Image (cartoon, rainbow over all chains, first blue to last red; front, side):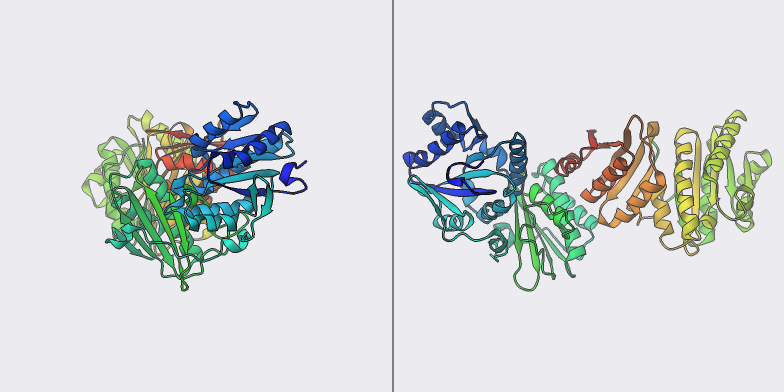
Length: 315
Length: 277
């Protein structure tokens, strides 16, 4: 049975919380968490260290609240979805009528890779909708850039305030939001000379070129995983895209950036990469694996083709 | 460990090695077969050439080979003498014959048995090819266990389309660069894999698994993939599915970190990854 603001709702009740200071935050978060404990619902706090400590203190170390170290869950969007889906399935299997989670994105996610996390916030409206989940995502308005807050309003259907809950007027359905075209910002490495350029490479040629060109600073496991991603996106371009296929690799001491461009339309599925598609959607599983194995992935449809860009950090 | 992968010549092959040799010019087959068998003689093996008369003449013209024939260390056999007239081979029976001939060679004081054969007749049609590929896997197991080595030669222009690549994958060694992987008999009953598995090799890999038909021991099919440079998610799904069809798990030995990561992401609960340094 759903309780609180989510009473009567089926599926995922996804709220944003905007706060300027600690008392702002606690005014919304405390009733949410303590209400969950009182209702006997699995109640999870996935805040970073500082806000988690705040909650512990404010609740007098309430034992009914489970704490999740934010870092572990939020390594990358596709991994976060997978981790949370597993967690939610586990909790739901215990017969819980509702699960409450409070969380926050770390400030570094509002930087160059923000679009990835905006897509995450949009996709989870669908990805967690099989579960009786009520979650709040907290955003500190004193440090969150305005363009980020704009997208938060478009990806969260509800807003939680101390005096009540209301719909977020700019909210946009994920199936629409995720297909909006945003040209990715070029990585600074892309301004320099590429280490590798190939036309119509086979997957094995692409893998070998990347292995040969990778700087020694790239940690072996990172490189091994990156090579899987490269193989997958080249395979997708060959099988589902349209020739010619161009592969370009830039290398730096701190990271590698690789693009694969083909003349096809790219994946049609709005959730491509964020969710594994095993229902026959072409290339779906490979794209999802790629999103698990790289530190940043962008999908670009400039009009006459499709470019996927992969970024991995050295370690 | 037996040698595996792509080779350019047959020098320095050992008592358990098994090579697929594709040729365009019969003179190439003759020269390579001669080298292979002379090396075997030098190592103390009993050797046998299985080929038509025109090829045999070339080898018999070599004084060292001829001397060995006279001494009983080498023999020449026409394919028809060894195999059934319809060109098909009875895998179980042929393996038994080779095991017996190997033991006889050892009993007669030789260090093992080595054969160079023109196996083109068995790869002329896709029907005989499939049966022969299955046989190659069975006889490869004999070679893994006993001091029996062989070179199976195939005339590219004569054999059916795709045969050379298919057969190359079914031997530990081949002079066929386009073979993406080799699936063969490993040590202690394991099935060994070298090369790389991806979208290009996917159909061949499914085919190879079916033909090799590795068996489970105590519920586990052991795959020694320490020589495998890359395996993609499709190939792992194929392996997992193959084992599931036999109500078994896969124990996959690998050096690559990415394999365990993929198995974890794919949630393949019947695949156990054993990392080897």
